[in-house]
Length: 188
Image 1 (cartoon, rainbow, N blue to C red):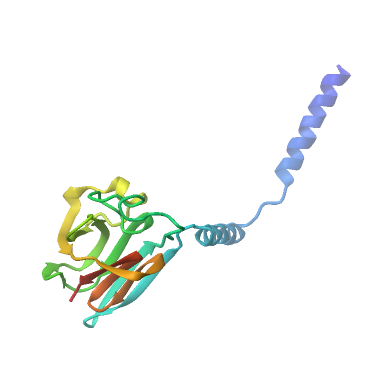
Image 2 (cartoon, helix red, strand yellow):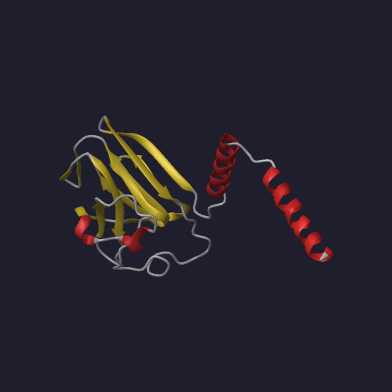
């Protein structure tokens, strides 16, 4: 009987102590969550890049994960030929267009679009603008029925190696560089 009383009293003391433990207020929780997200962003092997600028006086924005070459064979291996590639790492790369523009001479309405590419061993590459822009897992969730625009672009090969993927707003519109690739996409 004494044993049951002792166990009951111990349980009561433990639960009372648990109930009285200090709790953080929501602002402390929010700071902690923000710090956690910031740390997660900093720890990404392929850092998140966001670039904003103007093309022909029109606002343009691109967001992508920037993977590194890391002594890997990129084209035809890490990024296979003739298969849709998310044109970056992690979640889908996306662009935000504020006014109507043309891409390789074809019109595209204002909006947000995921950016995909189909690399090829020779000839032009296919660049795809897809209306489903917020894809957490990039090309694994890609659905061709949401394609808004497909254009053909000629890749250029350079001598110098670009270690990290970059997508820059520059002449002739948007330029993708990685490893020895330079893929200039004409946007006006």
